[in-house]
Image 1: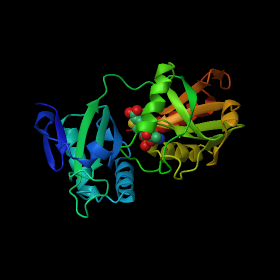
Image 2 (image 1 turned 45 degrees about the horizontal axis):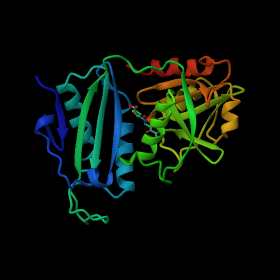
Image 3 (image 1 turned 135 degrees about the horizontal axis):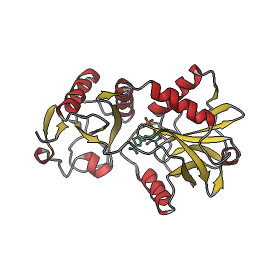
Amino acid sequence: MSVLILFNQDLITREQATIDIEDRGYQFGDGVYEVIRIYNGSFFELEAHLERLERSASEIKISLPFTQKEIQEKIEQLAAANRLHSGHVYMQVTRGVAPRNHPFPAKSDPVLVAYTKEYEKEPSRAPGKAIFMEDIRWLRCDIKSLNLLGNVLAKQSATEQNVDEAIFHRGDLVTEGSSTNVFIVKNNILYTHPANNFILEGITRRVILSVASELGIQIKEEAFTKQELLESDEVFISSTTQEARPIVEVDGRQIGNGKEGEITSSLHAKFVSRLS
Ligand code: PSZ
């Protein structure tokens, strides 16, 4: 059987789907999205992702076309139909189709699209390198919106410099990575930027904080400076695909001993123990 996608309420083939040229997602990036991981045929933190989707949508005044429970069922049907084993589901909701005009119509028909990706190999969490980049994005980074140009340009610079991530800072303060949250460890204390409008509150970030507290690690959700990051004992980034990935060099400067740190590794081990 061919691979299916979810298009509103229907499971269809990719070729059967049509996107209108005046879909506001296409013209304005007017929509929100989620990437949800599947391990061994089971979704990881599906409900948390759907709650975040609902919140992102509501912050930009989109009402989801289905209830959270209905979306959950449809996504589960999609993954089952495609026999997804280890991979992810990408889903997005746009405000839908309207004659091009900045203000949106009072009534709109949001368009939901979701499709699956099976991993050929597991995403790497080998120790990586990063660069710093000024965070030039807007001030509502808590919304997982389709507008990703700031993130895309930052990741492109990182790629051109042969590193794995661009770490954003506003002035001296580190916010997050272009597609990850950023943590540092200093004197056995775990620091990460507070979940406010300057960062996306990662689902992985939440799980990491939860396993850290289970391990009795002291946590400070406080912003730290670039200098503090460079002088820290451990740096790692977190995301749905990369889990907790050590960063051992930033702007060409070695972090700690240049290897994955002990706390990073124990947090990751505890994280893995939550997957089933
Ligand atoms: O496939 C990929 O490379 C993915 S899947 C999810 C992400 C990247 N990143 C999500 C993300 C983000 O875009 C920003 C700006 N900050 C933090 C994160 C981490 O969010 P979670 O942990 O929910 O994936």
